[in-house]
Length: 230
Image 1 (spheres, one colour):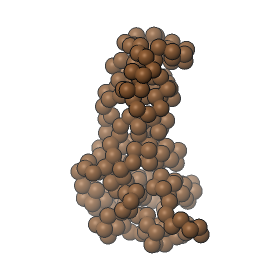
Image 2 (cartoon, rainbow, N blue to C red):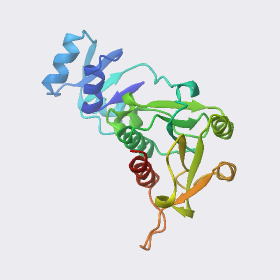
Image 3 (cartoon, rainbow, N blue to C red):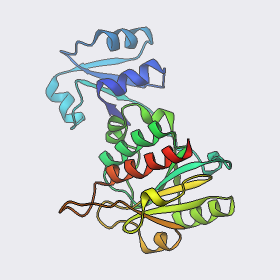
């Protein structure tokens, strides 16, 4: 898998993560990164800016690392006491996913759960947007979200979904083992997921726009949970 950008590259190098090779623009001038590549004996290939841009379409900042595919955690890695998880119900936008990862890491969330099908995976864009946070949080991929929710309920978890129609997010109790569920960018939570929620949290709005970006909505509810759980 290719990942790109100076911040991501520096994070991988400083943590001495496995790197197969580096692909760098001929005019790349970040001496700290170049020095770390040399010290760690990482095979490095120099290409023109045009060639680099063809390999990584986003803002690559002149550096691409070829790294092993992301390794997901398992449901057994979730704590059974005072656990705090976030479930993404078929989120599709890698930028939203990366931003949510950053929020979850900052708020001390124990794990993020995503479904195996019809959902964004951890890819180069997600890793870049997360700006290193992905290395400090568990990401779990499951076959069936509903079954996962039911299994966790048996282990003492209760779940708060997010939707425009529900209880104000500030009036919900977020203590104990909880899971916050964020729906798809366009469709929101699926009906079957909604039916398995214990509460539905809504964010009151006064403007003409009646919905928020998924990562923004996630941040508001997650940090309300953090505030109450301190």
